Image (cartoon, rainbow, N blue to C red; front, side):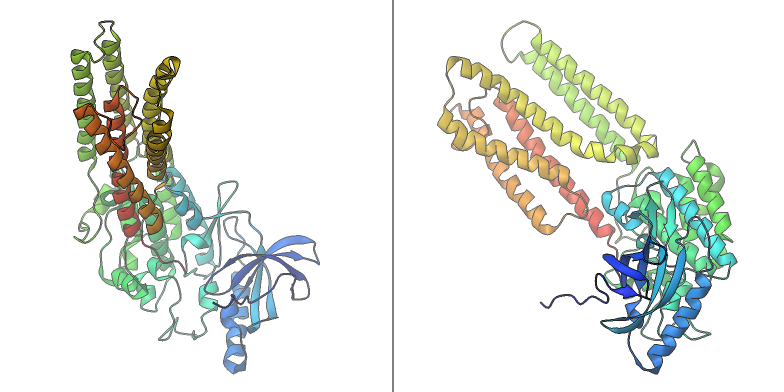
Length: 521
């Protein structure tokens, strides 16, 4: 494979004053560099539009039109818009190419935020309102964005947004004419976020609101409103399919969010919010609302069909609540059984205390579950801790049981060190690996990593079978969890729970990854 050819190189001087320092990113239109303005001695961002590089009359006309339209967008001065300082042309490895000089914003793109995991609903509403403020100012100046998507939104360290590339998609269209956005073979915008009328070649200001609806849908649910294998599939979906209600994709999304997003995603622009200012007002209402589901906007969801049969489905909240109650009942039943059987044969109250403790923990967990389910904002904040909590608890149970018997047997010299290292040590390491893999799984985990997880499942399944055989026969089996532990049933239960935990998370994260298939240019 030949090395990638860069449009510009480190240290190159553009326009006689902008020294390129390091490349920040690369997209379909060109490269973004951090540079130093040697005239004013400040750091700036430079975007080289390599899409328009080259010679000939067509290339010269396209660059001249880009610079003309870029001057119009450079007039935008808004706190939520990245300011354009300068523009010009420079020689690159592909030929003469135009470039934009912008303020250098330190922050993360929303695409990075999406990869990191769920976003708090109030945060999504606040960011959405700020994007609307930026769009409203641009629309008032007769400028449309035409390419609202996560990678074009930066979140600063102060928690506010900066919208990138206003008008750049339109200005960089080499086929654009005065009265037509595109010609055959070139689409301005990014298909997963493109309004139906923009896909037909006739955008308007409310096309940006539709793209914002797709972006917010992705922030709230973790997936786009439509899923497709390619650009044509996305465009077809935007033109012909109805989006699902966000609450049907992720349980716990308030009805007010359903109302707002489904209105932004109307096929007819006239049925969306009349302006970006109206949408901003609605979003700020969601960000400040103490309750997650105000009923004033609920009727807007009427008339929208349910998700298509091929789309992803999620368990309803009621179903998940019944599962939580069932788990609590099972823990209580097991605790009562252990208390009655009196496993250690000593009538000292330990079994009763253990059973009561288990019931208390299960009851407390059930109360926390219902409290979190009743507050959607808590769900987003608890998502990451809850991802690591079950594997950590299972490991703690395993380690506690093993450590207790290890201490007892070591005091009397009863441990078979060779067998412990060759069998118990390997099974313990594979159990720890499986628990770590279960905690690390996300919708973006690759097939190779998932395959390693299933290999660990196989090894742990062998240890589970060996431990069960030892428990039933009373004789040491060839491969099992730590063999000298007297409470083999505890290790067996942890092993089974670890396998079930990994398999459950593997299925749910893989489905979420398929549902959230996106295409970023």
